[in-house]
Image 1 (tube, rainbow, N blue to C red):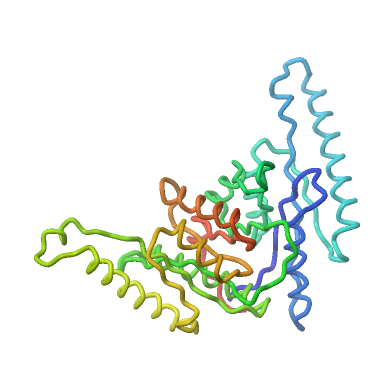
Image 2 (image 1 turned 120 degrees about the vertical axis):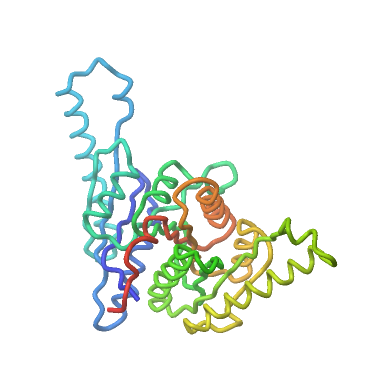
Length: 318
């Protein structure tokens, strides 16, 4: 499994609470407690931009540059002062970038710094203290080449369980198998750090074959039972190969955006790992819907294995 060497914590400008940074510091604490293991490098990254200048044609280029430089200076000073108080004695590097496209600047920095993880705070709206996904969330989910960890605004207290929502790919679905392995490998490192056990979640999507409907004696129940048996067999086989006990596998029929939150509500995991190998379309939208619903309904963080991260070389043991 891969050691986390570099973490990017996305800073929310002007906010006194920075859950993404706190989660990065907590991960460093766990590394520090283990003898012989170096804590990961933490980069606190803030992307800033003044959109008002886009609608103003009065200022000259020099004046616009001065405004940009002044704002960058203020944000750097604020971030450095914030870290002096809240970094808990850890060395945290800072990056304050002027960028109209925050998602692009974050993913580009992650690439340049060879980051292993991007941590971002879950955005809450004001009406019912729920969670909604911003354009930045969607940009990171679709374009980041490393997993994106969505942190809730709460004290991080490992519960003993790390959940991984796996799919049951077809025999010829190499990408699906790679996705399952990638999620498991990423979860294993966090599991080992926090002394949590990994539990697998699988949602069996109801399927009715048009061809089967014409067979004598066919009933939807028979097809459902066969689908469940086959899914259980393959999930348990995957679990057995990776040292996960049958009682740590949770398999239920239903749609993922309903099954995964329901099982997580029962397990109350420290974090849920989910992902998709799809880069766009309905599958990508479903991933975002599950992320948003789980993050909204439950207390756990959500670690998203993104489409591009699936294609990276699988991590190996140190």
